[in-house]
Image (cartoon, rainbow, N blue to C red):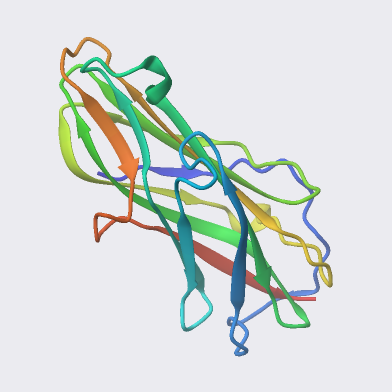
Length: 205
């Protein structure tokens, strides 16, 4: 199941000189500085991130990030968010934007129920992008997929020569609707096929 949405960006594009023909050859590294939210309370949940060997993307894996509804669970379980603050170490002379994000998760959604995934991104000191909503109606059971893409002209790049953290705020919701059973949607690395892939766009400064 896949839904494709275009990100509506409200921040100004940082000045850059030219689109890079390829990713930098020097190995990119990143550090997760903080992780917090109702879906990943500090000290009770974790996330990990790995950069692709060709520097074209990085992958985030969550644990215990789940929204639930129905079956007697508290209404507070129906909406969960997780915000990650990550510093991407970029080689001198380059800057980056997030061009596309691929989400995968696992869900069980009863007939009459629904679930939702949405996210936005921003560099520290800039305005967040608009959230793109991906809705999944029941009945459904299995791996769900969603993709956010950004037009080239609307890419928002990190300021050249500055160390700015990237903030990723993801949200999951579950709504029991007219169903009587329990439903859930999750991004949890317990399932081997579940991860989130962030694709870079590179430019030279």
